[in-house]
Image (cartoon, rainbow, N blue to C red):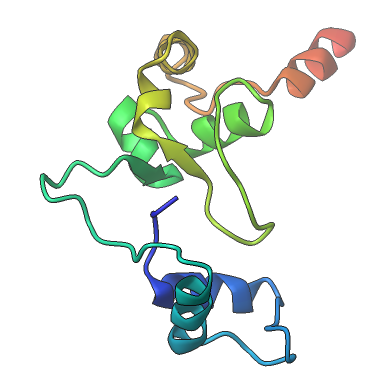
Amino acid sequence: MLIASDDLIAGLLNRNGLKTGNGNRWTRERVTSMRSNHHIPVFKPAEDGIEPWLNLGNAAKLLKIAPKTLRLAAEAGEIESIHPLPDGPWILARTWLITTAAQSIAERARQNPKYPAGSHPAQQNLFSSIT
């Protein structure tokens, strides 16, 4: 997946406490070297400006819902997403946002504007057992 610059990748790896094989912190140069050694193409923005991969915030804007709504849906497995590092971004393909599941999540959020994040399935079970 060509979704991030070498600088961003280095920052995410360091934030997650991951080290190089020699125990060093990641730098742009080390990520570039690793990418080059494994023949992974360099990231470059889409020429038309329509990126195929979006972070959680941009994906939520596209669906016109709150990022928390989308994150809860992703955590619950209601929408396809990638979260490769515990302290890293959620990543969604633009094509995943035009699915029935994504549209259903957005519609559910719009039907309940008082709670735009919607209800997580675990919360629904908790509230139904209280009432």
